[in-house]
Image (cartoon, rainbow over all chains, first blue to last red; front, side, top):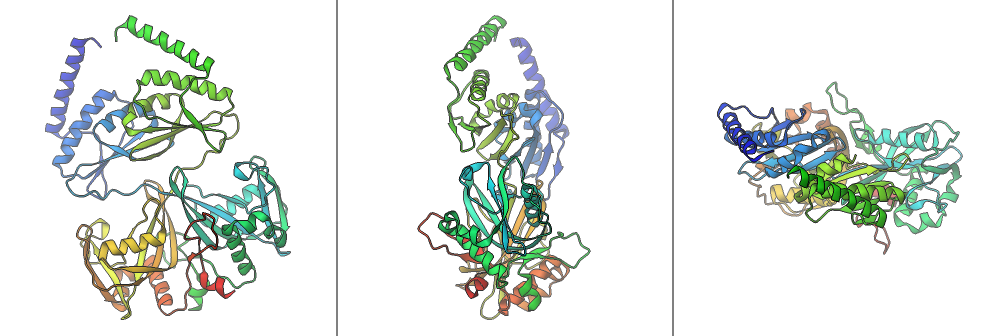
Length: 286
Length: 286
């Protein structure tokens, strides 16, 4: 843009800022429950014009005593991100299609919610009436090509119940239908990926079918294996974590161990369908 | 930039791209464990020059058969984000100081790890020898000003153990020292914040001190309250989730309920210090 045009443009932006502040015209925002506002950008905008309106909006929100300012920028409007950061916002979280930025404009200590910090995964202990356990060999990852038999495992999808995820993963990897029985134990690991943490839940499932059909993409082999064969694998015996898990499975199959299971909540209220995961055996006994 | 200079600049960028592809000069990247590469940007760069080198690097990585391409952009280099998105990258996750973008350049179905999906929180059931429970009234959030007494609660920090978080939150809110006893139950909620999920763990703690000193910022009041007084609050009786939790606490204080506790793993290996959370009572009995 030629210099004289630039300067005219800058002047008009400055005027626009004054107008916005004076008349309370600002970015469209909705109040949150914590004295803050949320802006969801949706229309394409020139980044300079946007920066100007953002500055004016911030002045307005400060006058109104707002605290946390959230701006959600869809990935198509990535050209606006730099302007937001230049106004002192930082990243709160991102998903494939958007970036959420936040700025705290109050004098009070900030009380912004933390970002999601954990990924949740499951391992499935599935034993049939012959005391055979459902095991797989993986095509990918660190166990590839090592001939190690392991329980089906997988990551809980966004918005998915842990118990449903266990049933889904077993079905996906082996085509076996199952019913969730109980959560036997869990492990919290840190710095599992990109510095984030991991919660791994060991679940017991009851098989409802027997014919295995392995998934091609991720699974090298799948079979029903006598428990003794699974457990004597050096991999299981040498990994204290797997050894302890196998001891819990033994205690469970011998019916001396009680884990957690979803305990329904008697209510018409919109409480979550799985209620709480509790030691249901102890709770109903007491 | 004047037109003729622009055009010369564009030409020199095109030459640079060719040089990069020909000589294998590209963005500095380290291989990951899944046939992909990770680039960590750290030096300020002109966004157009960066775009050009990025394109050349992608061509090189394709030739090398790479799959997932990760680019970590610190917030100071926000000017580079648009160029990355224009090359077909999408957001994987963000933390306050950086944005991680990813692109899958293989023909195979993508196997990129999921982003963290859950926030983890705790509630602390702390009962003293007089069968009084430690309760607080909050200054902020939806319970503000309602006179409701509740267990101390809080979010587990990034990298923090659940059991440590419970002890820390009680200490912060009330100054009471405690020891972690057991995890009694948990709830998984969806769409708790920004579409993310929440895992809430109810923990039992043993008090090691008795003198309360409430935290000023978040806590309106804190006290030791007879269990009966806590439990008859309409808030507790009418919320099925809280009512069930209170029944579990009763079962626990009457010693008929067994939850999960960290079970040490006997090993010199660097397995996690808390090992697995298990029903230790059942496991040692079996």
